[in-house]
Amino acid sequence: MRVIIYLLLSIFLGILTGHGQETISTTTASTSSVSISVDGSNVNYEQKGRTYFSISDSDDSYKVRSEFHKDKTAKIRSYLLEELGNDYLATSGNKYNWKRSYSGDTGYEVKLDVGTLKIYLDKELLSNRTTKKFKTITQNIKDYTSGKSSKERTAEKEKRAQEKKEREVERLERQAEQKMREAEHLQREAARLKRDAKRKTDN
Image (cartoon, rainbow, N blue to C red; front, side, top):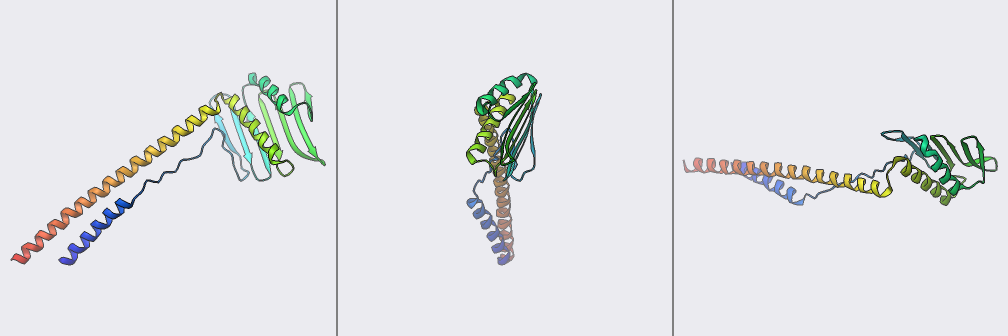
């Protein structure tokens, strides 16, 4: 009987010790309006309405496909002209095509038509600075077509992270309450066994 009581008390103390050492560990997901793949596969961004983004970012290339409301084409065209200039530009009606080659290989190509945009970079031919510039261009166009500023998206991301953290805290609190109930049950069971053992000893 003493062995049983000892075992129950050991289990109880183990539970309490484990509870005391438990820490809250939360993982906040890094999210953004445009998801970027690191293995070259396409990950799509879709928004209600007429905006669509597909970005592929691998070790050797960077690709963008976008569809948006045609009324936003003019402003995007003006922005690209400001950023890329007229060098390496060919036009045909509403189609604008910036293409720069290095020894016959395409370094970058930007195709803009009414309501559509395609960007291709060969990262092995371009400098990190140029690649970063095109990523900034992509993000700015995305901000404009989606109608959300970077500040608004950051606020949304922080809100989602906070909500996730609060859900995790609530889960851990429920888990702790369950362990406390189990510990109380073991306490009562240990006390009962102790009383039973005492009665048998007295008899």
